[in-house]
Length: 135
Image 1: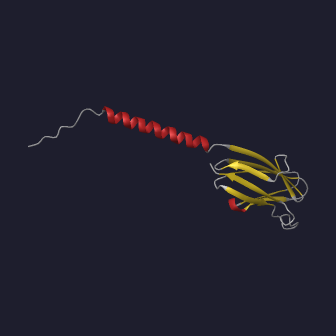
Image 2: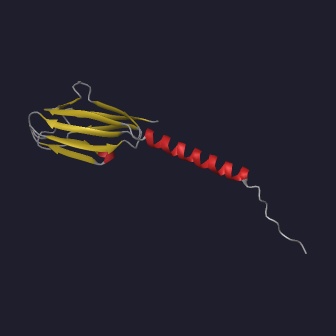
Image 3: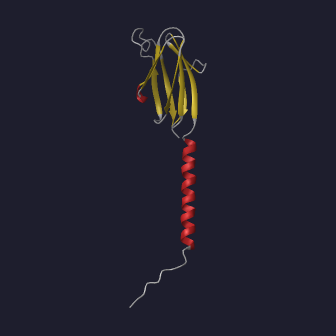
């Protein structure tokens, strides 16, 4: 008859398990830090033109997975900020602000525009771009 005798030396296994768990925690924490970048932009809409954070460039440039916060204001008439690829459409009245956030999950160049139909803003050039750079 053969008797099974369990080994009492489990030290190397425990050390490896602890090192593996520590590595997993470090990787998870690193991923969380990368995804936490927050970007703020002020977008102003004035008849047939957007300005982004005080510049004439009608572009918002971020990195993939950034949390984007936009404060939208209209200077003259009601306007909208429509970003179809992210399913965002916000309307703002003159003299008011609308703030919204979204995660820039998709890399690429995406058009945003004013979709107010009464003035045909998009056809008159009220168009900008969200540029999301891949990580």
